[in-house]
Image: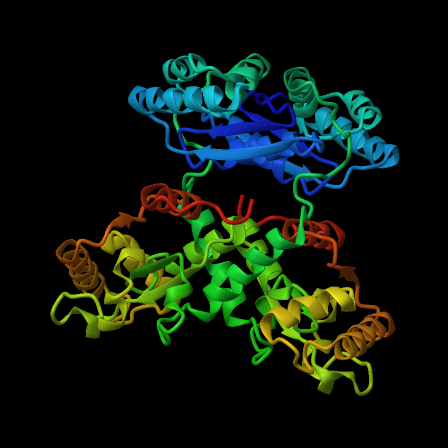
Length: 276
Length: 276
């Protein structure tokens, strides 16, 4: 029997699959009443692999009684044609857009596989790697002497999202992000710690709903004072008071993904991507 | 004067801009003879912001003498129409695909903004954060007692790409990746260190061209023995011999991006994404 509210989706690529996945998820997120079973199939770069995939798609179509959606970013036309044989509904991203771009740009596409997530040049690669190591080396607030090299210094209480955000910005955009955890010792006078003051224009605060913070901390250290709602309320109230008093811009991370926290901060502060 | 080989591209979104950027770069990478000046404009979620953007695009068009490319993933039709007023060539991703999907799925889109990179549920968010902390806590090989919780253990010489790869897999896919740096001490008998042997089926090796490794290490510690070509040749030869002898699968990271290293390993080992 067909369940009209469930559909399998294949994200297919001759490269990493990241573009097909990213675009596909954006599109599917618009159909909230449906449930999608996602299958990412990267590195489909031969006719043989394409034929294998066609059999897989057909099997799913038969079992589920509805044809899968196929979102593909394959460059090679013969591989695309092979996949088009499958019993699926194919949304061909490159066919849709590359021809249009070709006309507009008056330029011929190279038709080369897996271009987008390859190393384009070593400089771009290096800046991302350097940014990751910078984030790791400046993660715990233990040393602040490299803060003059930072593009941004994230401050907030433990588990407010500083470390994942700094690593995401490093990996994705090559931005140098230090982070400084604020602890009870810092709350006495509700002023920024002395070591941060000279870098004030680089500082951005993260805060989080105390209930959510408590839940996150309980995963790490169940039933500890550290994770108690009381403690979390005290800490978040104190940092927000500090941010307000010091005029430090800050963001509520409670309902945001790492991607949203990162891009919102970048938009607000006006930091440009270093690695693209 | 118009330079036909250069064009400005605006990636425009009502959310983070990641989808427009990812798709846009994939498409533009097909036009190798061109140079693109990229501008990402996230969070365009009001008519006022759209009108401001239109003025920006028009200014660029006037200065450069060629209309910019606009790749947008905006959901709201009135905001899209506003941007369509600009003197640019607009490739409207949602208009192109969402209508087609609506017909195929017999389902109505929600037309809600910034869906794709929002937190969909806390469980998915938590697994990514937990994976990041797992990667950080198991980054240097100092402790191996949590390796039973790892999905994957990356091994390789210093600066072969282990740390960025493990963090990327954690952030992007919620995969638990430990990493273990192999040093000279480990090369005596060309066998895996004892603490790794019981986890052998989770182990994946990274290796790298010695020239490239030497260049990377020189950025960190210029003119050191550590960075010398001799040392890098010795170490890479030794790890590759170890991998071959022990039957550890491995990958050459030299010409690969972090995304490629990660997705190739996942495809080869058959690890599924935990967080989507």
